[in-house]
Length: 291
Ligand SMILES: [Zn+2]
Ligand SMILES: [Zn+2]
Image (cartoon, rainbow, N blue to C red; front, top):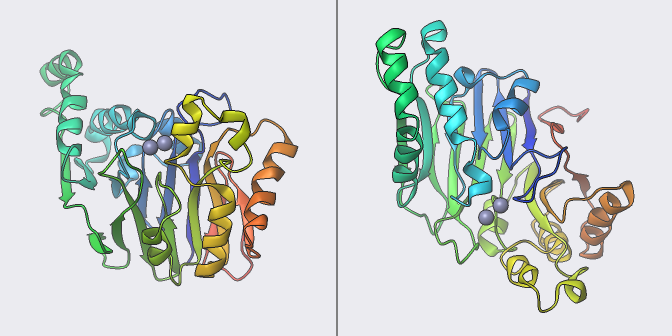
């Protein structure tokens, strides 16, 4: 048995033809967890061979729009297909604060379609199963698969001005995968990553581009994302064997720019394996051969 980690999107709010909005799919056997659902997540999942009805849960890190813009499509498509699959409402795991209202409004926006479909083919309106949790200052279990083989812990991260932001640690019989969500390099993710096999972390070239963005809005934006050099230092300290970079700021458009992300992580002292993410990059956990 293996656990796979597939990047369903490595992009950011600015559109990029090759990069869907942020998302990570963690799969173990028939347990499929989608973490965040940015732009075109449903399409990337289809490319990865996963349909919305197969998801065990959708986990949200925070509500910046780039991470949730495809929640509507994901939930609605699962509902439209439910008469074929009967898997029922999608479980949604998120911080209790803003997320329940967001999901409710997303579903309400399709009121016209819902009314038409309920009159003709659907048994009732779309719903989700909310697993809302209080923002945890220390890692806390927030979801467990019915088969008991896969558990998820969450911890708050440092993405202020967004207070309600978390990273997730997924534990399967094969190993541990940590997904940072959006955050500065922080002690919370360092602690969450102890003993992890794979750390999927957002990456921003803050140090390298400091002069170029000085005095611009980007300087402010970069301040709440993870500097590549500091990330390398943290990953070294934690001793994680494989660092996967995603949510790449700015999106690399050439092999040279891809290499710069890795170079900067190395400058931070990280000597383990680095994968600079691209959409549908898939990494295997619990297989000595790797992938
Ligand atoms: Zn964000
Ligand atoms: Zn983001």
